[in-house]
Amino acid sequence: MIDQVGQETFERLRLEMRRGVIVLAVLAQLRREHYGYSLRKALGERGVNIDEGTLYPLVRRLEQQGLLKSEWREEDKRKKRFYLMTASGREVYDRLCEEWRQLNSGIRALLEQR
Amino acid sequence: MRLVENYLTQASQLLPKNLREDIVAELRASLEEQVLDHAAADNRLPNVADEKAVLTDFGHPMKIAGSYLPQQYLIGPLLFPAYLYALKIILIVVLAINLVMVLAVSGVVSDWNISFLGLFWHLLDTAITVVVIVTLVFVAIEYSGEKLNWYENWQPDAVDHGPSTPVNRQDLLINIITEGVGLLWWNDVLTFSNWLEFADTSVAMSEAWVPIYWPLNAVLGSFFLLHVYLAMRGNWRGKTLALECFLDIAFLGLAVTLLTGGSLVELGSTASADLQASIHRAATIVVGVFIAVTCWDLYKYSRLAWRLRREWNDD
Image (cartoon, rainbow over all chains, first blue to last red; front, side):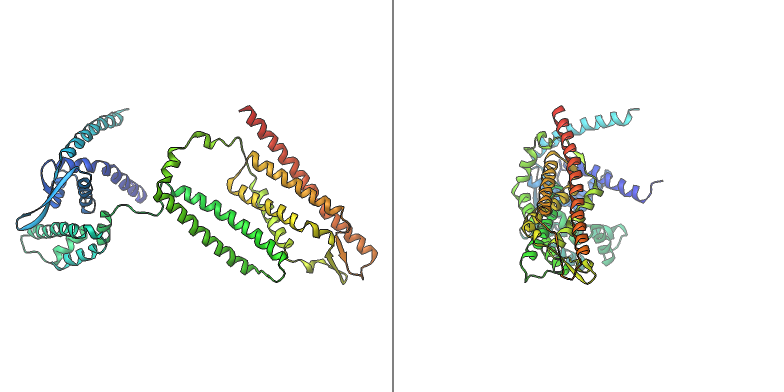
């Protein structure tokens, strides 16, 4: 049974591990257009739950880096900011995917090693 | 949605001005939709409870606002260990030098009577000044980008200080205390006059001590600073051993000068000849003991220096 300290350590490590791949998950979803809340819901439906305090600033940073573009539009009588991946975002995304596959296969091999 | 609006007002105050309107608008759209979703799950119109539930999930307004700001710090994690190390070293060295200087000056300037409390406040004042200055310097380094040059230009030669050997901390502590008390006494901050009264006869140091006032301050002060530094470093190296031996020789020189300079103490006129002879002998023996201890130290440290030199050559 994991004690309190072990649980806290696990939570911290889990967050660190997830932090690295959240960008990839967000970019993957933004191959098609989303606004903040719909993006969060879409990620959540696929088991990637990200709180607003992390997600919204992240998409803004990605936009500043030129990987996403955004526009304000009205939908269901509400103004919403829609995000979509740019061409250079697509390039970076493809390269990150390749990195992820390599890392994933390496980690898988390590985990299955006896 | 009153709670949502209040929440956004509070968060907006912490956001950068140029982004405030945009971020608040985006948060508002998201919060309002979530409140509606929360109510719709129970098939009813939204109320305050829905707002509370959504805002609880969002977290403290300061936390949300903070997540939009770049990570800010005065001294970052890359530089912080160097800052702490430098602060420790500079603080101890400056305080030790300050202590020695204050004691030396208080011994010379007759109308400057320094008390223990006065000394404490003076050192506290100095320590705060040092902390502020060192912190400002490191903040400047942090924001100048100079730290990157430090790390990028680093070469393994930088850690090649030659062989070293650990210090004996017990010995050092005894030395530091002895030298500290010695400095306090030599500069009249500590007085032991009550202990030096025999049979109604006053005992005072003779004129023979006057010429060595400043040299002894310099040697004792240097010993004190060196031993404080060694206590922090934890290792003897070639240069510190050489300095220790040099100071031992200087101390021996002063002691010999003192012994050849005539009577060490002056007694009142009422003292008998026997008492005078006994006191003179006792004073000479005390100085002799110091000479013997210093000779032993000189022998011990020169052997250690020799050993390190051989290790250096063997490398």
